[in-house]
Length: 101
Figure 1 (tube, rainbow, N blue to C red):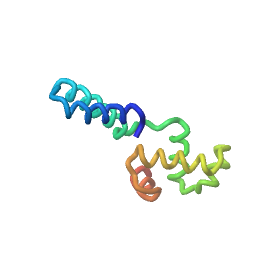
Figure 2: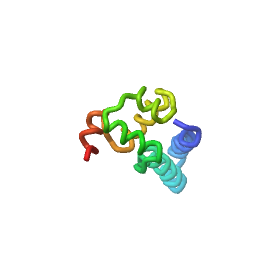
Figure 3: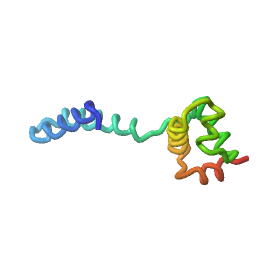
């Protein structure tokens, strides 16, 4: 939980002890907006993520993808994780099944 979210949550708790409905609604609304931004994934893949997606679909390993893209296998793992999250897939197999042409 980041600072801003914690602030609104604490303010909301505080104003629940005081009969000021407008403040409760204001902070509850701001807290809801913050949380909805966190939940909503960005679905557009970056250029690098698209290139890595194509290589994953071809069955390449993280090490092979790293050598092709000139990045470390840890960076590949992070990109693959982001791709799985953005495309709402649980694992590489589901990703391949869903996006193989």
